[in-house]
Image 1 (tube, one colour):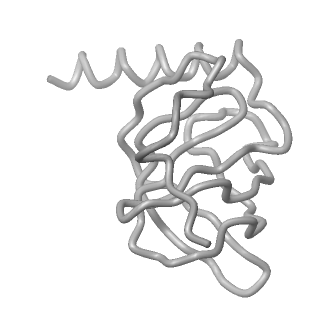
Image 2 (cartoon, rainbow, N blue to C red):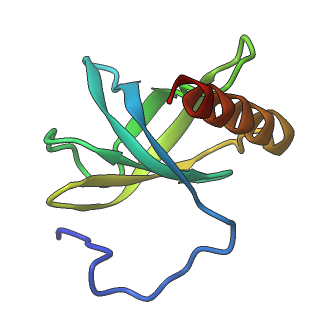
Length: 112
């Protein structure tokens, strides 16, 4: 069964944040690279052409966390032709996430 969110109702209860940047993730067999397009404290969407299975466990390197523990474990919970949604098994710290996103946004504004 190929689960898709395209025809499902919205179940998110946490705010989503847009992000456009590379993200690295791994299964027990190999490493992959994709594009992180949005995230919340407990989930994210990875744009990729890789065809992984729903239920697949991943280790994800979160690019905007500035601490030594920038990796999170998650599981693919849905997919579509553009990529897949991952439910994180442990939440990202909101304070650091927000501070880091604000810092990166300020750098982008200053560079423009």
